[in-house]
Each structure stands twice: as structure tokens, then as C-alpha cells.
Length: 181
Length: 394
Image 1 (cartoon, rainbow over the protein chains, first blue to last red):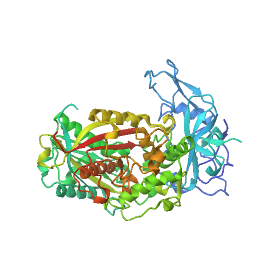
Image 2 (cartoon, rainbow over the protein chains, first blue to last red):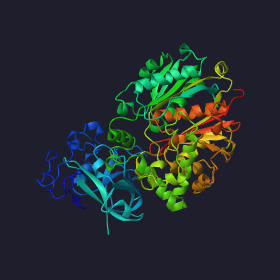
Image 3 (cartoon, chains in turn blue, orange):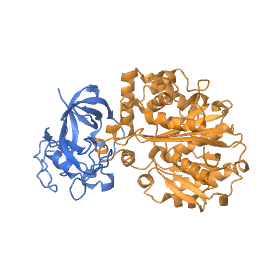
């Protein structure tokens, strides 16, 4: 899985990768437009992106692995149940001893739409953007996510995609899909 | 049903729309309207209050809304006072809770009220509020809100069953036409012809503006009581005969095929089974048409038509006056707007008013006896159903 650095708002994807420290921010090229102030000042309770550190979530390994370019989830060590999203306890047998497993990078679009109006705060400038449900190749999971790479008007059901991680602009990472071919 | 028989004995809906008024003012307005609509009801009769409110923290920056609503409505509940929150089904949750309280004997007279204020100066903040109904940490960062989810349902339904934009528009045209008979509806005075609907802007492809319910301010309230007291308030009680609910999933990854809503089949099966009737016995249904495609899938999940035939059912007018049953005579969420917590109550108000023949003749269902009310919440992951019977003995 490729690890691309692309802050979510405005800033071009030509910047250096983020440092290891979650406090480090990528430098901003002088020519790049500045992200809207809402990005910096958006209150915690209006920020959909979760806190990712070990001091905040027991699922911090998901984000650590994502930062290394690996999309992963948890699997129950007793019944082998594969979860999405990652969990701290198995919903089937309630065992709390779960293991991290990497997920396939590639998949195919099961359904998609696009947001042409009504984006949440901080995502307005990203409209129109495509979202969809992606069947992962070789895993019994259908993940929802942003689909980059082609405008929604050129997407089709069955479109091959690849998962990628990206820096959201403040040291945190998230995942999305990008069209292949 | 076990426990005491319970009925809705009165109810009222405020004007729905973009209202220049606050959440507490809506509570006062619906309280005043309720006591005018049910003149035999005295404030001291009401021992319990259930407040359906989905997101007052987000839209009105207000928690602890149950006592606030009680104060605004002039009530001092002394048995049960609580808020019920189930996103878009918060209103029906209030009714179901009141029903359970009365059936068990914990309450004798309860008010279920739904209040939502959604139009705020920042639409982006309002959209974020709608987004956090989803699994915010996993689906939210991608920009998930209701329109793209239901758009995917529509896309799959079109692919698997050949459903068309024209069939979606048939649902919208019907419900907006009914809303033109309902002065409390958000779009009471707005006309939506089918050809006009097909030219409205796309919100989330393939859904256009006319396929989506709107952000609406409004409130509604009903009074529920037991068989012992029902006749002291009305001659036409709407008896609760069945109730069912099912929660399938929450994260969008676990949404299944999208085009089948087995949770609704199950919830409706339980509610109808408890009532001892089948879907063919229904005279009217208030179905949760948050989007046009929702009503089409609901026809199928309820068994009103075969799987995949919902679009045709709509286009053939089988959910219209003169059809198999009348669906959404109030105007639905599409025509009335969708003030989240108020919707489920307003649907029940319509059933009560249909049973008491107090709706305008243009939408009066002829001699209705059985009605079903359905709320879904979130991404159609939870389905809540209640079945009502008109008048007669307890």
C-alpha cells in the first residue's frame, strides 16, 4: 500500500512525509494555498478524525500500522472472526484477546455515490467527492471510504481500487481508496 | 399484548419548516397546542413525559432537555421523566417508552413529545451533526452522511432491479402532493410535478433534491393513556396493538446488500404478529421516506410487493389513495420535512387524526381501522414499527 502525503484541505501533495512524532507538522510550500482556518480551529467535537495515540485509544496500533502503509484490523484469536472496524472485544465470543492482521490492499467498488452538497464542516471545499463501499479482494469485508483518482462521473460499479493511507495535515493519518487502471 | 391496553387519545403537530424560533420555544408552542387540541387534558393528569430529541446538544447546545421541555410545556411529571434518543426514530422511541410505562402500570397518563431545531446559521455544522449519527470515527472522516448512503441503496436497487429515476420521482410526487393538503408540512405550499422533480439538482447521485427529506424545525406531541381512562379524552382512541424493533448493524461495512432491509421485515413481522393482523389488513401506513428509495425498499420489506417490485409499486400508485393502502397521507418526511425527534410523533398524530376523521378530505383514508407506523434511524440500521387500531373496545 502506498503511503501518500496529502493534507486534506488545499495543500498540494508535494510536501515531505511527516516526521515520526505526531506533533510534527509537514512544512508548507510557499506557493501552496493555505488551508482554511476551520482546519486549525475546528473544535474537537466537530472533528470526525479520531485521536490516534496510545494515550487516547486502545486501537492505536491501527493508526501506527496505517502510518507504515498497512491497512489492518483485528481478528479474534479464539473463533477467527475478522472484524471491521477494529475492536477490543470479539462481538461473537466476547474474548478480549485479539490479534492484528493486515488486510488486502486491493478491492472492487460494490456501490458508490458522491457528495455534491451537504458536506460536514471542514469538508466543504472537498466537494464534489466520491464515497463508496469496497469489497476487499480475498477478505470477507466491505469497507466504506472516500474514493479518489477519478471524478464520480467516471466511476463504475466493479471499479478496481487500492487502499492508501494519507496524512490529514496535522500528523494524524487515515485511509481511503484510489482507483486503479 | 400483555399488560393494560394503551391508546393515543390526542395529539398535535406544530408548523414544520424553517422556523424563526428556538428549541425551548418549540416546546412551549407544542405544549400550548396540545392542551388546546385535547381540552379534557389537565396538566395535573400528566404523570410522565417522554421527550424525543435526537441532537439538541448539536443543534441547540442543550442537554438535559427532558426537564427543560417539561418546564416549557407547564408539566411537572412525577412518575417518569426522560429523553429518548434514537436519531431519526427518537420520536417513536418516546411513544414506545410511554406505551411500555402505561401498559405496565408505572404511568397512567403520559405525554410523548418530539422536538427538533435543525436550521442553524452554519449549515456545515448542521451537516456535521447529521454525520455523527453514523460511526463517526470510521465512516465520518470519509464524509458519510445520510444522502450518500441512501444514494448507494438507490444505485444498487437500480442495478439489481431496474428501478428508475421516474419511479423515485413517483414517490416524491405523491408525498409532496399529500403535503399540499397539510398546512403543518414544510412544503405545504410548494408544488412538485414529476418532470420538475427530475430536473432538480443532484445532491448525491442518483438522488436529486426532491428525493431527499429536508432539515426542518418542528415539534409534535401525543397523549397516551390506559383503557381505564381513554374514553375520558376521546371517542376515537388509537389503540397500540403491536410494537417491534430491530437493530441490524451500525458501521456501514456491515450494511449487507443495501437493497434488502431484513430488520424492517422482522420488526414489522413482530408488530403485526402482536396485533394479530397481516400487512394486507392495513388501511394506511406512515413509512419513513427520508429518501424516495427508502419508501420503495420499505414496500418490499413489508411484503406489500415482491422484492425488486417497489419501484413499480410506486409508479402504479399502489401506495396512493385508491391503491392497496395509503402510504404517507400526511406528506411523509419528503413533504413535511424531517425534524428528527418530531417525525415519529407527527406520524402518530396523523394516525390519530385519520382515525378521528379530522384531516382534510383530500387525504382522508376511507374508514380506516388499521395503521402501521415505521421509523428507521441512521443508515436504515434500526427499524421501529408500531401498529394501531381505531376506536372500538380496549
